[in-house]
Every structure is written in C-alpha cells, then in structure tokens.
Image (cartoon, rainbow, N blue to C red):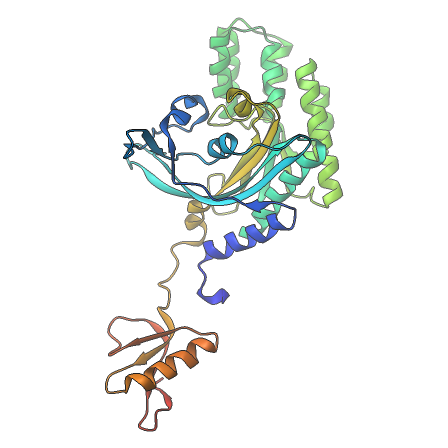
Length: 369
C-alpha cells in the first residue's frame, strides 16, 4: 500500500498517527468562512489578501487563508478540559504578489485550554517529531516573544521605534539595530544587551543560563522561566536534541504572544514548520483561555524532494481486446482482491503500469513482460 502513496500522503499518514497517539483527534472544516472573520482579524493574517465571493444567500464569504482562526472561532474546551485537534487542509494565499494566489497545503495541530508546562512541552515535542517524519537532520528553533519585547521595553523608546527595532531583530542586523536605537535616543548597556540577545543561538539547554543573565524585568524573567520549563519537559520526552534557542525569531503575523518556534529541514531554505502560543487570538474573539499549535507547510517539501516521478496508473495493465467481458471481470476482481491495482483497457496507449497482461485462450492470465 505504501508504494502507491505520494511522499506527502505518507507524511500526512505518519503525522496523523503521531498526533492520535497523544489524544489529538482529526478535525475537518469548510474551505470557506464568513469574510468578517478575516476582516476583523487582519493583523493576525499573513500578507497577501483574501479571495472573496458572495454566497447564494447574499453573505460575503472567503476562501480560508488560515486554519487557526477557523479552529479558534469554532471550537472551545469545556470547563477544566481541553480541545486537541489535528488537521490537513488547504489555505489560499498570495505569499508572492507576482505569482498570485496559491493553494498551500498544511498539516498541523492545535491545543486549546489551560496551557501548562506539560501541554506546552507536548506540543513542541510533537513538532520536533513531525520534523523527524520528514527526514533526518531537522532542527527546531524556539524562543519566547516576551524576552526581546522586554529588552526593547527597557530601552524606553516610542511605539513607532519598536517596529523598526523588531524589523532589525528579525534580520539579525546588529549594525541596523544600533543605528535604530541611536535614532530612538537609546544608548549604552541596554542596547548592547539587546544586540547580544539577537546573536544568541545554540542548544536550548546550554543557552538558558546566558539568557537568564540578560534578564532585566518581569517580562524577560517570565520568558526565561517558560523556556526553562519547556527544556525540562523535553528532557522528560528524551527530545532535547536538535532543539535550539534562537532569541531573534519573529512572526510574520500578530499571532504569537509567548513561546514561538520554527522548524527547518536540510535542503529547504525556509521554515517548513511554524508555531507558538496564541492566547491573543482567543482574547480578540472575546474568549479566554490558552492556545498553542503549529503548522507544517507541505508545499515546501517539493524543494527538498523535487518533483516526484510520474506515478504508475496501476500495478497491472490488463489488455481487454478480444477477451470475453465476463472473463475480464473475473480476472480484474482476482487481481484487485490480491491487494494490487488493475487497469483494464483495450490497448496500452500512454498508460504507465508496472506490468502488462492479457487473457490467453484458456482464460488464464498471461504476462507480457
């Protein structure tokens, strides 16, 4: 059976099995939602616009550009409980305006409810295991958005200046960061501390002490505490390897307000996995509670594997020319019942199959290759 699955299908099957083993359940959703969901949450969406259309009842609808917003809107845990779901869905975005809208395939999971240290660590563990399902050598980079935000807050700069500082952080541009700080009136040790944090990268367990030494306020202390708890849970899972601290991780949207992580695979220049805490999303929808999740961008894996060779149409091409239909039916049923696949047609044509056969004069199967 594995032979006739595409690489993407095999990965999704492994991902579904992995999530199921930890109590997550499949979730299916419509391809579209009411446009108001996205219009009211533009700051949470990646750039590129939304495809809209008018429904038969006059409502303005949109092809979904995002999965998490739909889940956050439609699912809610009961008192003291949690919602654990996984999905494989398509979203419709224009990540490159010159290329226009694209259908982007994602697989991911979401946890809604009280996000304690274990729940946080479990989701990050499943993210790391998902990278392993893609191939060897995957690395998960983690940080806490509060650490850099706390260091920038300690500079005492204006809100307008924060945007430029965060842009420099995301680019790991120490020179630009110093120039932006100087333009905002910040100088001295706090600026150097921020630059050191941006350059901090390496195994999570080995860099927590350095992160703690740079902590300056309650926001950065909370970030260090959260990352320390995460490391402890991952150690319990036996999954601290290939989990790195990268203090300069930023998000393309306003989703994440705590733990943030991204996954990389050798051979693919962009992150193939992205996730984090998104309590702010629930707050904007008038709901409390915590939320954490991640998405795998399956369309990027084509860069890793290249285009797959043309699939076989079937295991056996059964030529039907001149054969009695009843005998063909019996032979086709026997081939399919044996676990293989069969394509019955008069001549080979352009069909590509593993083997070719026909019925002999006695009605038996005769292979031609």
